[in-house]
Image (tube, rainbow, N blue to C red; front, side, top):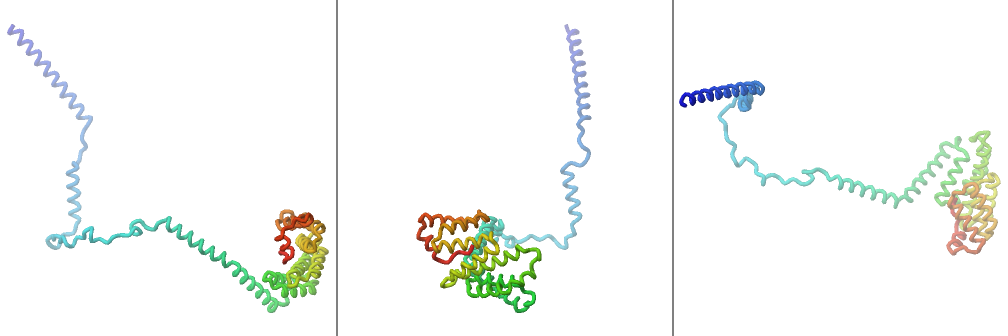
Length: 293
């Protein structure tokens, strides 16, 4: 039994040695697969960088000195920053400010617009009159007709009528500035002259109705399809309560300009006049100065 037990012990010892050898071989193989990188460790690398930085610094001229605590600023001693210094301008506030300024400027211009328009018109009149003085040889009746229209826009109807009458006397000179083949242009210019003159005559106090009627008729004589002259004749007929003839005349104007709102309103007033349905405001409008079409 003793011999058999020793034999068993030697067998177990050999097995243990074999297992130990196999484990050592496996550990060596794994070690070769996962080798650590060659070089300094992180601690060694930091020490090397610090040594290089310290070496690059200039040598101290004297022993190091401590900064007094009183010289170190505290948070309470620092100046308080405004929101503008911290975050910059507020985009919403800046946009609102610009919009408000634009609204104020536009409102001021809109309120004072009639004044500026009249002032610009007066400057144009003065410029046109200066042209007749300094460039008399190059001026034409068309320039004088434009000056009369400016006077009418300024509500200076006597001056406008005076200019229109001078243009009528010298209208033969217009052919010099028109194309020799532009016969319609010459006829249209003459029709506009008589229509403008008739309108100015209607605005006088008292209105010169008979003379204005003659000018409107002369306008359609030169230009039978002239819509504005037909409307002026229609208004003059409605003043005399001849609504049926006025409606036919206004329909002729609508034939050439059917989309003009003022012409449509005048024709509607003529229809109401034929049916006796005109309101007091419409009758007052017909009795007063006629609007310029």
